[in-house]
Length: 222
Image (tube, rainbow, N blue to C red):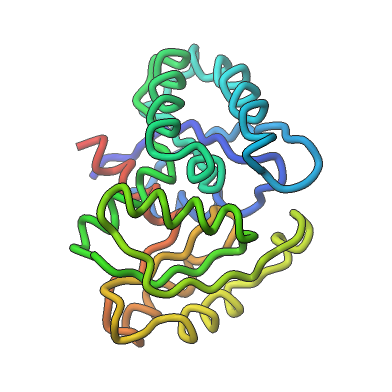
């Protein structure tokens, strides 16, 4: 497939997604990243509206760029917004930038549907409120969360210290024979180095927020 020029939007604290998504996209692909400002603390139902408004304001910078597509790479914001709110933001970003838009939350659903998954195991770094929203988000597409394990990072500093090896071990501990697939949520969690190995070990599809976003980007580009 030909290389792809993406505009990437991530939370201001994200240090993982740009490097990893480029490893999953076709060779020669490029990425211009905009970091969305955020209030101190983790995203919540109370703060996500201001965060989304900041994203829309920032996205105007992409309107004059020679890009193929925009990726909104914040899983938790999409989960908190719900499927309807996430789709609405994607439409607003497309109108603002003049480019097709992939959101990580919707890519999660599409990737699991592609795998035929109906009952899944989930690993996240989130606190209970966002984990509950994730379960609701998937349920809207008839995907059940059979097992969920979270690092429960209390702040972005704790989130940023989670390693790929820790993610892999948590995935092994969480997956069970009653699950069709595994999903590792959050674009800050590093997963590029571990997904192929986990698929081999677990014998089932294993996706992450970043890989699902890359896969959906290629799918959108035909």
